[in-house]
Image (cartoon, rainbow, N blue to C red; front, top):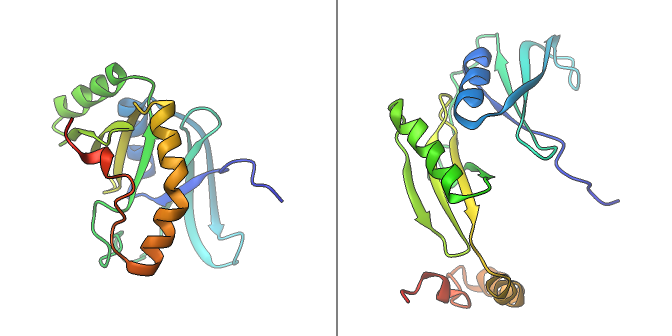
Length: 176
């Protein structure tokens, strides 16, 4: 078996309608599908929900569930730093990314960045559900990507043995 692509990624949301409108306004994602059920098809559990699907471009789908029952309030993993769990989405240019940043900030949404990761630049912000999002523009050259590809197994093996950050790609963070 070979995975063809990710069919969709699903997160919980606080308000499905607000989420559809927010992602349309700030990230130009079209609302493509809504599914609502009173029971979870995979488990049969009585748990009414609204499942929405947004077009994230190039066949990628971002989905959300709003739950109608008295589930515990939505949260995130308290044992993981907030910066770890995020969804990164690629945009076509710095101009597009900076225009998105301006739209977000104009409406009072805090944006971090742009941050230079050497092989890409990105901005970070939160959606109205508290999910951390990243918009990224690739800036890496084929030579940079080859250098990283050449050391990936050495890096993961060293990390597995030591749990210390390998220095094989330290050039990415050195000042020119």
